[in-house]
Image 1: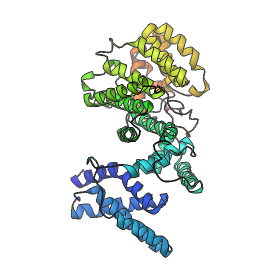
Image 2: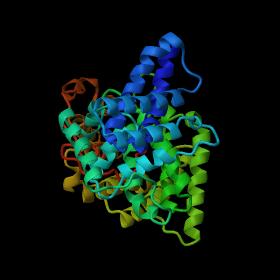
Image 3: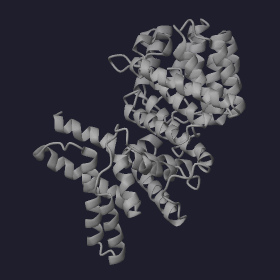
Length: 454
């Protein structure tokens, strides 16, 4: 990859949402803004190799998108009054704002975009799809893979979302501070769904989709800047940071999954951990002053228990199991129950964990999830019941869709049953639902309520 290619990739990652957001503000047309952003990046691929990468790539792309908007509107025969309004808006914005990272950088356009994408009038799956497309810049095909849906179905979902915004006259702006808290549930759900899909991809060859993790962390920071006094906002930021801090240790050089107990804690990102712990402490201080601890803050406390343990053996599993019980009280979910059963098994022994797992395994929302047989197999392995554990790993292998997780499960099966038993289990994976699925996919059960201990 050349230096220009690298600059183009980096610009797309960093600037797509900003370019789309600004162009929507100028034109008021979501589909047009996306088309113009695509025009701008296409122009960059033609001109940057010839003329060099501009000093301010974001400003260059934003200007190109605005010019494209004017050109498209002129060609479409847009009435003179509307064309003049857009031209005036473009002229007002002709002096580009600061680049990302500049202390003067105010993300108002992107925050307006996030708030509009996550408007409560839109279904959650539409909120996620719009955020992935307009804020993160994923293609329709990529979004379809996230949802486990076809490209055609995903395109229709995006069209319905844009039409709903227009028909319902949903304003394109950051809600006033006194109204934003009522919108936080949707915003935080989208942030954590993005992070969860990046942290353990529901399908594909790679365990991690780092771009989604990066976008989720970026969005969590933006929301925390806008609403600094909400405990759940702080909790969501802490949660994604503390989990993301482990990314370098979660896979080996071959891309294979490394479970939490085997991770090299020296590879955890100390800066991300410190930032996450600071966000959690800020959230706890807000609770002490009368704020309410919600599920994100509780999950952040679970992540902090892992982050601060000097070793896997020194992990306070009793505190983690208690936190999962609190999470289940605040936000009942079979996925939280499943993770809580694993924590109980670590705190009180595998038999206790198996009993807790039996209490939630029959929930219809867990049907088809490989996490149930995988968790059962791991508890059975810890209990020394190798033959039963092997059966569980085989069941999980028949359901898992992520190749890195498949290889991990195959290794575990080989450990308890011998390598000769692995090959028959590596049949094509069946469609999965549950923690690995986003809402709106085939049989999806909704958002993930519990963080993974990997």
